[in-house]
Amino acid sequence: MPGLSIENISMRFDLPNGGSVQALRDVTLDLKAGELLSVLGPSGCGKTTLLNIIAGFLAPTEGKILLHGNKVTGPSAERGMVFQQGALFEWMNVRENVGFGPRMKGVGTTQAREKVDHLLDVVGLHDFKEKAIYELSGGMQQRVALARCLANDPDVILMDEPLGALDALTREKMQSLVLKLWKETGKTIILITHSVEEALLLGERLLVMAPRPGRIHKEYRLPFADLGVDADLREIKKHDDYGDKREEILEMIWNMEEEIMGRTEVAG
Image (tube, rainbow, N blue to C red):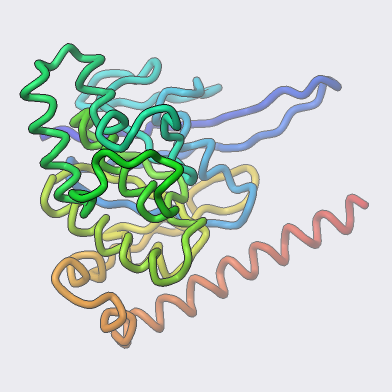
């Protein structure tokens, strides 16, 4: 089945003073349907810009995005987004938030209700269906955001640091949930993160991006996501290769950050 193609994507932002910022340059990548990709890199390397282009929120300066052979020209239900903050509707309860997409598609009331109830069971919110959003913890709100995204049945799920604001224990539980949903749904997932550990755990493919102009510096193909589906993630972290890759990538990003700081000092 055709997947997602990122073809020679470049993005330049023009500034009011007549200057410009080259956020991305010649990013090319092919993802098969059902692959799980994590994207990592120093601040300002264009991770979120790339995700927004894939989502259709931004039009690239050069290049194109293809999904199943069709060019992406704007937002679409085929590509669902989960943000760092849930971006939930505060005036709706949990069930209403998750059911919003199916309602907008004209799905029948009974069918939509069954779908919503199933997804809330999957993400562990069976007993919170009628709760207001403000009554939920941060982790629960992100579970609602995941269920709402899945309710639209997208082919690709885009995640922009969705676990970054959570405490360590909740984050670990959510990482396990992401792996479970990936395996059970077969969705293509692209996850942006600042955490090297998270990128290793949640990426069967992992991209390290270089700083501005953003570009792919190195790609890894890793076993940890598959291993983590049926295992305790703490045990996965004890894997010898996991520790080696973690140190290698940390040093890589540290050197990039040092390079960025050096440029800033010279410019100053």
